[in-house]
Length: 425
Image (cartoon, one colour):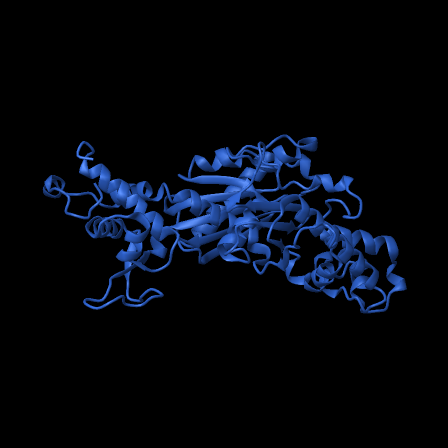
Protein backbone atom coordinates (compact mmCIF):
# COMPACT_ATOMS: atom_id res chain seq x y z
CA UNK A 1 0.00 0.00 0.00
CA UNK A 2 2.95 2.35 0.64
CA UNK A 3 3.75 2.34 -3.09
CA UNK A 4 0.30 3.73 -3.95
CA UNK A 5 0.11 7.54 -3.72
CA UNK A 6 -2.03 8.75 -0.84
CA UNK A 7 -3.89 11.03 -3.23
CA UNK A 8 -4.95 8.04 -5.34
CA UNK A 9 -6.08 6.10 -2.28
CA UNK A 10 -8.09 9.08 -1.13
CA UNK A 11 -9.68 9.43 -4.56
CA UNK A 12 -10.67 5.75 -4.61
CA UNK A 13 -12.08 5.94 -1.10
CA UNK A 14 -14.06 9.04 -2.01
CA UNK A 15 -15.69 7.15 -4.87
CA UNK A 16 -16.55 4.18 -2.64
CA UNK A 17 -18.05 6.40 0.04
CA UNK A 18 -20.13 8.13 -2.61
CA UNK A 19 -21.35 4.71 -3.76
CA UNK A 20 -22.70 3.99 -0.28
CA UNK A 21 -24.45 7.35 -0.10
CA UNK A 22 -25.72 7.11 -3.69
CA UNK A 23 -27.84 4.07 -2.83
CA UNK A 24 -28.91 5.11 0.66
CA UNK A 25 -30.72 7.92 2.38
CA UNK A 26 -29.40 9.82 5.36
CA UNK A 27 -26.38 8.09 6.86
CA UNK A 28 -23.56 8.63 9.33
CA UNK A 29 -19.88 7.71 9.33
CA UNK A 30 -20.61 4.40 11.09
CA UNK A 31 -22.91 3.36 8.21
CA UNK A 32 -20.16 4.08 5.69
CA UNK A 33 -17.51 2.28 7.75
CA UNK A 34 -19.76 -0.78 8.03
CA UNK A 35 -20.18 -0.97 4.24
CA UNK A 36 -16.60 -0.13 3.23
CA UNK A 37 -14.35 -1.25 6.09
CA UNK A 38 -12.65 2.15 6.05
CA UNK A 39 -11.27 3.79 9.18
CA UNK A 40 -13.15 6.71 10.65
CA UNK A 41 -10.42 9.10 9.53
CA UNK A 42 -10.59 7.92 5.90
CA UNK A 43 -14.38 7.99 5.98
CA UNK A 44 -14.57 11.54 7.30
CA UNK A 45 -11.95 12.71 4.80
CA UNK A 46 -13.99 11.26 1.96
CA UNK A 47 -17.23 12.76 3.25
CA UNK A 48 -15.49 16.12 3.57
CA UNK A 49 -14.26 15.86 -0.01
CA UNK A 50 -17.76 15.10 -1.26
CA UNK A 51 -19.14 18.08 0.64
CA UNK A 52 -16.43 20.28 -0.88
CA UNK A 53 -17.49 19.06 -4.32
CA UNK A 54 -21.11 19.96 -3.57
CA UNK A 55 -22.29 16.37 -3.97
CA UNK A 56 -23.15 15.77 -0.31
CA UNK A 57 -24.27 17.85 2.64
CA UNK A 58 -24.70 17.48 6.36
CA UNK A 59 -28.25 16.80 7.41
CA UNK A 60 -30.03 18.13 10.46
CA UNK A 61 -32.34 15.10 10.39
CA UNK A 62 -31.02 11.88 11.92
CA UNK A 63 -31.14 8.49 10.30
CA UNK A 64 -33.56 5.71 11.12
CA UNK A 65 -31.60 4.59 14.18
CA UNK A 66 -31.33 8.09 15.68
CA UNK A 67 -28.28 8.97 17.76
CA UNK A 68 -26.19 5.86 18.44
CA UNK A 69 -24.71 5.34 21.87
CA UNK A 70 -23.49 8.00 24.23
CA UNK A 71 -21.15 10.94 23.73
CA UNK A 72 -21.34 13.54 21.01
CA UNK A 73 -24.30 13.25 18.62
CA UNK A 74 -23.45 11.59 15.33
CA UNK A 75 -23.05 13.73 12.22
CA UNK A 76 -25.46 12.78 9.46
CA UNK A 77 -24.91 13.13 5.73
CA UNK A 78 -26.91 12.80 2.53
CA UNK A 79 -26.65 13.34 -1.20
CA UNK A 80 -27.21 17.01 -2.05
CA UNK A 81 -30.30 16.64 -4.22
CA UNK A 82 -29.94 19.94 -6.04
CA UNK A 83 -26.29 19.39 -7.00
CA UNK A 84 -27.33 18.37 -10.50
CA UNK A 85 -30.16 16.81 -12.46
CA UNK A 86 -30.94 13.55 -14.22
CA UNK A 87 -32.95 13.38 -17.43
CA UNK A 88 -35.19 10.54 -18.57
CA UNK A 89 -36.43 10.47 -22.18
CA UNK A 90 -39.01 8.10 -23.63
CA UNK A 91 -38.56 8.23 -27.39
CA UNK A 92 -41.79 6.46 -28.26
CA UNK A 93 -43.29 5.87 -31.66
CA UNK A 94 -45.99 8.51 -31.15
CA UNK A 95 -44.40 11.04 -28.78
CA UNK A 96 -41.28 12.16 -26.93
CA UNK A 97 -41.75 12.36 -23.15
CA UNK A 98 -39.19 13.82 -20.75
CA UNK A 99 -38.83 13.97 -16.99
CA UNK A 100 -36.09 15.86 -15.17
CA UNK A 101 -35.32 14.75 -11.61
CA UNK A 102 -32.91 15.87 -8.94
CA UNK A 103 -30.19 13.51 -7.74
CA UNK A 104 -32.51 11.65 -5.35
CA UNK A 105 -35.27 11.10 -7.91
CA UNK A 106 -37.74 13.92 -7.20
CA UNK A 107 -39.35 15.10 -10.45
CA UNK A 108 -38.66 18.75 -11.21
CA UNK A 109 -39.99 19.06 -14.75
CA UNK A 110 -41.98 17.20 -17.40
CA UNK A 111 -42.32 17.77 -21.12
CA UNK A 112 -44.04 15.88 -23.92
CA UNK A 113 -44.24 16.51 -27.66
CA UNK A 114 -46.12 14.55 -30.28
CA UNK A 115 -44.49 13.14 -33.41
CA UNK A 116 -46.10 14.46 -36.61
CA UNK A 117 -47.58 11.76 -38.84
CA UNK A 118 -46.39 8.85 -36.67
CA UNK A 119 -47.91 6.12 -38.83
CA UNK A 120 -46.60 4.03 -40.39
CA UNK A 121 -43.96 4.16 -37.71
CA UNK A 122 -41.31 2.31 -39.72
CA UNK A 123 -41.30 5.20 -42.20
CA UNK A 124 -40.65 7.94 -39.66
CA UNK A 125 -37.77 10.26 -40.49
CA UNK A 126 -34.94 9.50 -38.06
CA UNK A 127 -33.64 13.05 -38.42
CA UNK A 128 -37.00 14.37 -37.23
CA UNK A 129 -37.00 11.94 -34.32
CA UNK A 130 -33.56 13.13 -33.22
CA UNK A 131 -34.52 16.78 -33.57
CA UNK A 132 -37.75 16.34 -31.57
CA UNK A 133 -36.02 14.33 -28.85
CA UNK A 134 -33.22 16.83 -28.37
CA UNK A 135 -35.63 19.77 -28.46
CA UNK A 136 -37.89 18.16 -25.83
CA UNK A 137 -34.95 17.62 -23.48
CA UNK A 138 -33.58 21.12 -24.06
CA UNK A 139 -37.01 22.65 -23.44
CA UNK A 140 -37.44 20.76 -20.17
CA UNK A 141 -34.03 21.94 -18.98
CA UNK A 142 -34.62 25.49 -20.16
CA UNK A 143 -37.75 25.68 -18.03
CA UNK A 144 -35.50 25.08 -15.00
CA UNK A 145 -32.89 27.55 -16.32
CA UNK A 146 -30.47 24.66 -16.81
CA UNK A 147 -28.39 23.34 -19.68
CA UNK A 148 -26.41 20.22 -20.65
CA UNK A 149 -23.63 21.07 -18.19
CA UNK A 150 -26.07 20.69 -15.28
CA UNK A 151 -27.03 17.15 -16.32
CA UNK A 152 -25.25 14.37 -14.44
CA UNK A 153 -26.78 11.63 -16.58
CA UNK A 154 -29.36 11.13 -19.32
CA UNK A 155 -31.32 7.94 -20.04
CA UNK A 156 -33.20 7.09 -23.23
CA UNK A 157 -35.92 4.49 -23.71
CA UNK A 158 -37.00 3.23 -27.13
CA UNK A 159 -39.55 0.61 -28.29
CA UNK A 160 -36.83 -1.67 -29.64
CA UNK A 161 -34.43 -4.30 -28.31
CA UNK A 162 -31.25 -2.67 -26.97
CA UNK A 163 -28.09 -4.60 -26.10
CA UNK A 164 -25.55 -3.72 -23.42
CA UNK A 165 -23.71 -1.44 -25.88
CA UNK A 166 -26.83 0.58 -26.69
CA UNK A 167 -27.29 -0.96 -30.14
CA UNK A 168 -30.54 -2.20 -31.72
CA UNK A 169 -31.11 -4.72 -34.52
CA UNK A 170 -32.88 -3.75 -37.75
CA UNK A 171 -36.30 -5.22 -36.97
CA UNK A 172 -39.12 -5.91 -39.39
CA UNK A 173 -39.28 -3.22 -42.07
CA UNK A 174 -36.50 -1.43 -40.19
CA UNK A 175 -38.85 -0.45 -37.34
CA UNK A 176 -36.33 -0.95 -34.53
CA UNK A 177 -33.62 0.93 -36.41
CA UNK A 178 -36.01 3.84 -36.96
CA UNK A 179 -37.01 3.93 -33.28
CA UNK A 180 -33.34 3.86 -32.23
CA UNK A 181 -32.58 6.69 -34.66
CA UNK A 182 -28.96 6.97 -33.44
CA UNK A 183 -30.23 8.90 -30.44
CA UNK A 184 -27.46 7.56 -28.22
CA UNK A 185 -24.70 8.96 -30.41
CA UNK A 186 -26.53 12.26 -30.90
CA UNK A 187 -27.00 12.96 -27.20
CA UNK A 188 -23.43 11.96 -26.39
CA UNK A 189 -22.25 14.97 -28.37
CA UNK A 190 -23.66 17.32 -25.70
CA UNK A 191 -24.13 15.20 -22.59
CA UNK A 192 -21.37 13.50 -20.63
CA UNK A 193 -23.15 10.35 -19.41
CA UNK A 194 -25.85 8.78 -21.63
CA UNK A 195 -27.49 5.35 -21.50
CA UNK A 196 -30.06 3.76 -23.81
CA UNK A 197 -32.35 0.83 -22.98
CA UNK A 198 -35.52 -0.84 -24.22
CA UNK A 199 -38.62 0.94 -22.91
CA UNK A 200 -40.01 -2.10 -21.03
CA UNK A 201 -36.60 -2.66 -19.43
CA UNK A 202 -36.71 0.93 -18.18
CA UNK A 203 -40.22 0.38 -16.84
CA UNK A 204 -38.72 -2.45 -14.78
CA UNK A 205 -35.98 -0.13 -13.47
CA UNK A 206 -38.62 2.46 -12.57
CA UNK A 207 -40.52 -0.13 -10.56
CA UNK A 208 -37.30 -1.19 -8.81
CA UNK A 209 -36.36 2.36 -7.85
CA UNK A 210 -39.74 4.02 -7.31
CA UNK A 211 -42.57 1.50 -7.53
CA UNK A 212 -43.81 -2.00 -6.85
CA UNK A 213 -40.45 -3.84 -7.03
CA UNK A 214 -38.33 -1.99 -4.45
CA UNK A 215 -37.73 -5.16 -2.43
CA UNK A 216 -37.83 -7.59 -5.37
CA UNK A 217 -34.91 -9.42 -6.99
CA UNK A 218 -36.94 -11.50 -9.46
CA UNK A 219 -39.77 -9.77 -11.28
CA UNK A 220 -41.22 -9.03 -14.70
CA UNK A 221 -42.71 -5.69 -15.65
CA UNK A 222 -45.25 -6.04 -18.44
CA UNK A 223 -45.38 -2.72 -20.27
CA UNK A 224 -48.83 -2.52 -21.82
CA UNK A 225 -48.89 0.51 -24.08
CA UNK A 226 -49.32 0.45 -27.87
CA UNK A 227 -47.96 -3.08 -27.78
CA UNK A 228 -46.73 -5.49 -25.13
CA UNK A 229 -43.16 -5.76 -23.90
CA UNK A 230 -41.48 -7.17 -20.82
CA UNK A 231 -38.72 -5.84 -18.63
CA UNK A 232 -37.08 -8.78 -16.88
CA UNK A 233 -35.04 -8.61 -13.67
CA UNK A 234 -33.63 -11.91 -12.39
CA UNK A 235 -31.35 -12.32 -9.35
CA UNK A 236 -31.29 -8.54 -9.05
CA UNK A 237 -29.96 -7.93 -12.58
CA UNK A 238 -31.68 -6.49 -15.64
CA UNK A 239 -31.61 -9.23 -18.30
CA UNK A 240 -31.17 -8.24 -21.96
CA UNK A 241 -29.79 -11.17 -23.95
CA UNK A 242 -27.22 -11.07 -26.75
CA UNK A 243 -29.13 -8.48 -28.81
CA UNK A 244 -31.46 -7.04 -26.20
CA UNK A 245 -34.41 -9.24 -27.15
CA UNK A 246 -35.21 -10.99 -23.85
CA UNK A 247 -38.34 -8.92 -23.25
CA UNK A 248 -39.61 -8.88 -26.82
CA UNK A 249 -43.02 -10.54 -26.94
CA UNK A 250 -43.58 -10.77 -30.67
CA UNK A 251 -43.57 -14.55 -30.30
CA UNK A 252 -47.00 -14.23 -28.66
CA UNK A 253 -48.46 -13.93 -32.15
CA UNK A 254 -47.69 -17.65 -32.48
CA UNK A 255 -49.11 -18.67 -29.09
CA UNK A 256 -52.84 -19.50 -28.94
CA UNK A 257 -54.91 -17.93 -26.18
CA UNK A 258 -52.90 -14.78 -25.44
CA UNK A 259 -54.16 -12.55 -28.24
CA UNK A 260 -50.76 -11.84 -29.73
CA UNK A 261 -48.59 -8.89 -28.81
CA UNK A 262 -51.16 -6.20 -29.56
CA UNK A 263 -51.55 -3.46 -27.00
CA UNK A 264 -54.62 -3.37 -24.78
CA UNK A 265 -56.08 -0.24 -26.38
CA UNK A 266 -55.74 -1.82 -29.81
CA UNK A 267 -57.60 -4.92 -28.64
CA UNK A 268 -60.37 -2.80 -27.13
CA UNK A 269 -60.82 -0.74 -30.30
CA UNK A 270 -60.79 -3.77 -32.57
CA UNK A 271 -63.39 -5.56 -30.44
CA UNK A 272 -65.77 -2.60 -30.33
CA UNK A 273 -65.56 -1.83 -34.03
CA UNK A 274 -66.06 -5.47 -35.02
CA UNK A 275 -69.09 -6.05 -32.75
CA UNK A 276 -71.02 -2.81 -32.58
CA UNK A 277 -72.37 0.14 -34.55
CA UNK A 278 -73.08 3.45 -32.85
CA UNK A 279 -76.86 3.23 -33.46
CA UNK A 280 -76.99 -0.10 -31.60
CA UNK A 281 -75.85 1.50 -28.35
CA UNK A 282 -77.75 3.72 -25.96
CA UNK A 283 -77.20 7.46 -26.11
CA UNK A 284 -74.47 8.39 -23.64
CA UNK A 285 -72.84 4.95 -23.63
CA UNK A 286 -69.04 5.41 -23.74
CA UNK A 287 -68.70 3.00 -26.66
CA UNK A 288 -71.23 4.96 -28.70
CA UNK A 289 -69.36 8.18 -27.95
CA UNK A 290 -66.15 6.49 -29.09
CA UNK A 291 -67.68 5.25 -32.35
CA UNK A 292 -68.99 8.78 -32.98
CA UNK A 293 -65.47 10.19 -32.42
CA UNK A 294 -66.51 11.97 -29.24
CA UNK A 295 -64.35 9.93 -26.88
CA UNK A 296 -60.72 8.70 -27.14
CA UNK A 297 -60.12 4.98 -27.07
CA UNK A 298 -57.63 5.34 -24.20
CA UNK A 299 -60.54 6.20 -21.88
CA UNK A 300 -62.57 3.06 -22.62
CA UNK A 301 -60.73 0.55 -20.45
CA UNK A 302 -61.95 2.15 -17.23
CA UNK A 303 -65.57 1.61 -18.29
CA UNK A 304 -65.34 -2.16 -18.75
CA UNK A 305 -67.69 -3.92 -16.35
CA UNK A 306 -68.34 -7.61 -15.92
CA UNK A 307 -71.98 -6.83 -15.05
CA UNK A 308 -72.68 -4.70 -18.12
CA UNK A 309 -74.11 -6.94 -20.89
CA UNK A 310 -72.47 -4.70 -23.50
CA UNK A 311 -68.94 -4.59 -22.06
CA UNK A 312 -68.90 -7.95 -20.24
CA UNK A 313 -67.74 -10.07 -23.23
CA UNK A 314 -64.68 -7.83 -23.73
CA UNK A 315 -64.02 -7.74 -19.98
CA UNK A 316 -63.94 -11.54 -19.82
CA UNK A 317 -61.88 -11.82 -23.02
CA UNK A 318 -59.22 -9.50 -21.57
CA UNK A 319 -59.24 -11.33 -18.24
CA UNK A 320 -58.69 -14.64 -20.05
CA UNK A 321 -55.93 -13.09 -22.16
CA UNK A 322 -54.04 -11.75 -19.15
CA UNK A 323 -54.52 -14.99 -17.21
CA UNK A 324 -52.89 -16.96 -20.03
CA UNK A 325 -50.19 -14.33 -20.46
CA UNK A 326 -49.33 -14.38 -16.74
CA UNK A 327 -49.09 -18.16 -16.81
CA UNK A 328 -46.75 -17.99 -19.80
CA UNK A 329 -44.50 -15.31 -18.24
CA UNK A 330 -44.39 -17.21 -14.96
CA UNK A 331 -43.37 -20.40 -16.75
CA UNK A 332 -40.64 -18.75 -18.83
CA UNK A 333 -39.07 -16.39 -16.26
CA UNK A 334 -40.10 -17.72 -12.82
CA UNK A 335 -40.62 -14.26 -11.27
CA UNK A 336 -41.86 -13.63 -7.75
CA UNK A 337 -43.97 -10.73 -9.01
CA UNK A 338 -45.45 -9.55 -12.32
CA UNK A 339 -46.17 -5.82 -12.54
CA UNK A 340 -48.49 -4.45 -15.21
CA UNK A 341 -47.24 -0.97 -16.08
CA UNK A 342 -47.86 1.79 -18.58
CA UNK A 343 -50.86 3.90 -19.53
CA UNK A 344 -53.37 1.10 -18.83
CA UNK A 345 -52.21 0.31 -15.29
CA UNK A 346 -54.55 2.72 -13.53
CA UNK A 347 -57.67 1.33 -15.24
CA UNK A 348 -57.03 -2.38 -15.26
CA UNK A 349 -57.49 -3.35 -11.61
CA UNK A 350 -60.77 -5.26 -11.99
CA UNK A 351 -59.50 -7.14 -15.03
CA UNK A 352 -56.32 -8.14 -13.21
CA UNK A 353 -58.34 -9.42 -10.26
CA UNK A 354 -60.41 -11.58 -12.61
CA UNK A 355 -57.22 -12.77 -14.33
CA UNK A 356 -55.70 -13.80 -10.98
CA UNK A 357 -58.64 -16.11 -10.38
CA UNK A 358 -58.34 -17.71 -13.83
CA UNK A 359 -54.62 -18.49 -13.90
CA UNK A 360 -53.73 -22.10 -14.49
CA UNK A 361 -52.70 -23.87 -11.30
CA UNK A 362 -51.27 -27.01 -12.92
CA UNK A 363 -47.79 -25.71 -13.76
CA UNK A 364 -46.25 -27.17 -10.60
CA UNK A 365 -44.74 -23.80 -9.65
CA UNK A 366 -46.03 -21.28 -7.10
CA UNK A 367 -47.91 -18.50 -8.88
CA UNK A 368 -46.26 -15.07 -8.86
CA UNK A 369 -47.97 -12.09 -7.30
CA UNK A 370 -49.77 -9.90 -9.84
CA UNK A 371 -49.93 -6.14 -9.22
CA UNK A 372 -50.65 -2.96 -11.17
CA UNK A 373 -48.06 -0.19 -11.31
CA UNK A 374 -48.74 3.14 -9.62
CA UNK A 375 -46.28 5.08 -11.82
CA UNK A 376 -48.71 5.79 -14.68
CA UNK A 377 -47.59 7.41 -17.93
CA UNK A 378 -44.24 8.41 -16.41
CA UNK A 379 -43.01 4.85 -15.90
CA UNK A 380 -40.59 4.77 -18.87
CA UNK A 381 -39.07 8.27 -18.51
CA UNK A 382 -38.75 7.69 -14.75
CA UNK A 383 -36.96 4.43 -15.51
CA UNK A 384 -34.72 6.27 -17.95
CA UNK A 385 -33.77 8.76 -15.24
CA UNK A 386 -33.11 5.87 -12.85
CA UNK A 387 -30.91 4.17 -15.47
CA UNK A 388 -28.99 7.41 -15.92
CA UNK A 389 -28.49 7.61 -12.17
CA UNK A 390 -27.10 4.07 -12.06
CA UNK A 391 -24.60 4.87 -14.81
CA UNK A 392 -23.72 8.33 -13.50
CA UNK A 393 -22.56 7.12 -10.09
CA UNK A 394 -19.16 6.23 -11.54
CA UNK A 395 -18.87 9.56 -13.39
CA UNK A 396 -20.36 12.10 -11.03
CA UNK A 397 -17.11 12.94 -9.20
CA UNK A 398 -15.40 13.82 -12.48
CA UNK A 399 -18.48 15.80 -13.48
CA UNK A 400 -18.37 17.73 -10.21
CA UNK A 401 -14.63 18.38 -10.55
CA UNK A 402 -15.14 19.80 -14.04
CA UNK A 403 -17.95 22.04 -12.80
CA UNK A 404 -15.84 23.23 -9.86
CA UNK A 405 -12.90 24.01 -12.13
CA UNK A 406 -15.17 25.93 -14.46
CA UNK A 407 -16.77 28.00 -11.70
CA UNK A 408 -13.74 28.49 -9.46
CA UNK A 409 -10.66 30.15 -10.89
CA UNK A 410 -8.06 30.27 -8.10
CA UNK A 411 -5.66 33.15 -7.62
CA UNK A 412 -1.91 32.48 -7.86
CA UNK A 413 -1.68 32.31 -4.05
CA UNK A 414 -4.59 29.84 -3.88
CA UNK A 415 -3.10 27.69 -6.63
CA UNK A 416 0.16 27.43 -4.72
CA UNK A 417 -1.55 26.39 -1.46
CA UNK A 418 -1.54 22.61 -0.81
CA UNK A 419 -5.03 21.04 -0.57
CA UNK A 420 -6.38 20.75 2.97
CA UNK A 421 -7.25 17.40 4.50
CA UNK A 422 -10.49 16.05 3.14
CA UNK A 423 -10.29 17.87 -0.20
CA UNK A 424 -10.35 15.98 -3.48
CA UNK A 425 -6.88 16.06 -5.10
